[in-house]
Image (cartoon, rainbow, N blue to C red; front, side, top):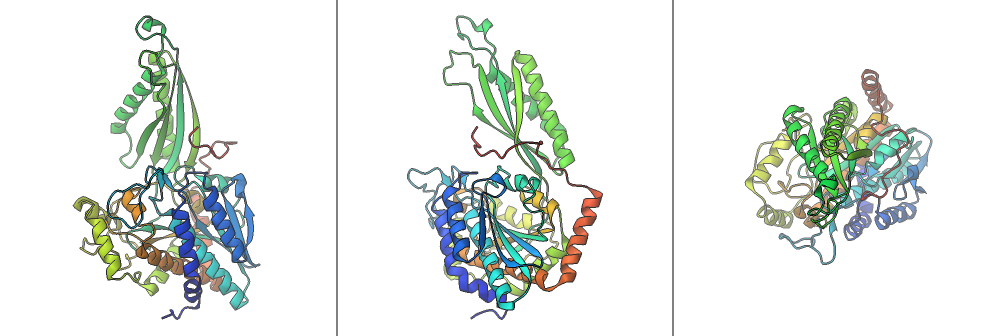
Length: 471
């Protein structure tokens, strides 16, 4: 039975094609800035639906923008399609079973995110045409959210400069508004240079770059005791200096991810990490150079848009999951711990139940445990009034960035959750287009926040997008 809302009927009419798009992208997992096939699929769908398409948006080969409509407010709906390394997994299987010959997988649901956002944009395009109203809807295909921060570069380069409102979503265990809090982040590479020598015959002539990296890591680990409790620091070796233990390592590189609650706190913490690196170089008589790879700002709230999106979610109610959806979700939950399940409820501020899938809409303003990550939607939210939904697409308790997430990326439940949140996003876009007062309130709130704290890009001037994230 069709919903009485005309915009939701447009979503339902197009849903099968976009479910198929999501599944195709799931089958071709591609990492940051390498989403060539996934981007091509999205661009082809935009053209097939009659959008005016621009590829290579912001100088990023796998970014794009599709626009439909004329005049009026500009509504941006943001999509993503990047995958994660090491999360290959067969679909629809409740046991760890990587696919042969593959390392990447959609362990964060971005195959659903991009297709669902494009579905919403297509529905709004059709609604505008049917109503004969002024207004433009844009789908922005945004690559490399997983650390590449493509949106941050796109914001810096003015890609969203004429947008009035931005709407997006992310897969989750519950239907909710994304609480507008996240950690600002910088991704930095530290490269130490020393001197090679024979580790046994002439160790006194060598200066180990690997020793310097290890001392830096020790120093940063001691720093953890003396930094804000909501800050985070992570690291990974990019180059450990070689595989021969009888050669003193002349070069080594470590990548650091520094996170803090806001941009000023981030820059302060990153400077402390930089000083520790310099100290490690001093202790080992090596030299060190550093470079920012990418960065993201924290999210900026917009209550008028959050209220409008939540009202759409409430009108929809939870996704129409059935007994088969719940049965497979129970199989997934059998692979999880009780702590996983309890933590998911606490994060969203809802009572712990035995329901395997979302069966309610989280109240607006529900206060959960603060377990924050980072997103480059943060920078968009400083450039333009922005709102995000959480769409329920997987079993409650499923950890993000896990094989269980990848396994659920093509299930009927995931498809239902994607279509459900597409309706909410499309409905919110229509609310903005219909109600000039809502748009004015959203813009006024945004302007007040910027007046208190002006936006400064966390990217160094002149930094190019890190199209080769491995280097």
